[in-house]
Image (tube, rainbow, N blue to C red; front, top):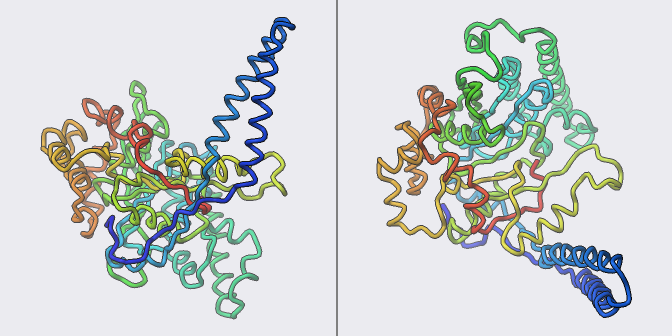
Length: 473
């Protein structure tokens, strides 16, 4: 999959022209050097205050040089998502992760909108899976996702039928969305019906939040009975499973709820620990070669985000040339002209693109596509013989733990086997294995936390990373 059959490139690397900015920065550098030279030459005529000023100005000049050198060679990437679609039916599966921890600080309606924006992406539904990690172990969050899955069957169809751009319902219905779309009577009727459905969903979640428990703790909700937030067994629930492989309409992607096991005497490592569990659970269920992680209070406002990311992940000559694709963050309802810099324009548009010109941007913690084999600790400098050595049963168990299902899926990813992601999955049959790898003691006596996942930033620093000029979330 790393060498697309299409003869046209999937992306272009464009160097920004910043001649004027460079000239200004060189002028400032000459002034700084002149000031430091003046301080040094006239040091004997002044006292301690002169020395202190010299040290401060030297430190400022050093930091300024580092900052300017970072922004010196800014690049951006132009992607061609329509060329990726030529790879059908060989498009790779993609797993998406959503992390939430507290239904009070992070209301479930936010998580629901994030999930809905992911389920409605312009990508084959049978090749998408959405995993929601709930570190709060909240029945309210699970209830909200169950209700959202029912609404998603209508919402996904509506978005794709009318090519809706913003696919988070709360944002779509908050503006003048109908006036900018099709004005046909059919669209207006569908729009009103969809808005009514979303208001009913919101009301159900709001009513459930007012009660001590959102619903009767029976059936699928029985696992939440007498649950304690920091002391409970792992809970893995398949809310919706897509069984329409090859269907042109595609339906709704997989939706899986996860609340990993927590015990008082076992450290859980917050979001990093949740990401570890998401990686393992998705590995035994769908095992997609690429993964997208987003926070629960974000939404995807470009429905072709997966295609844009795959332009870079699939368009490189070798897997070692791109470990992850980071999308910038943008914030809605900001003040006009952004007087307080809340949009982080300097960070993403200048520093981020400058780092992309050197080697690649930093991992932002959200809005990022990962190559799964890199998360599993595969180095770009390892040869086939070294990789084969890692695939022995003993090494796999030592690295990835005792789960036979997970070690098998890890071996498929590391070896580049397509069988792990091209065959249909029966998610319900994988729930038992998923619960096993979601326990708090699974990582003990394995490489998790030492060589796998926890050293992600260090182990991938030798890769070339990409920063796309799109709003990823």
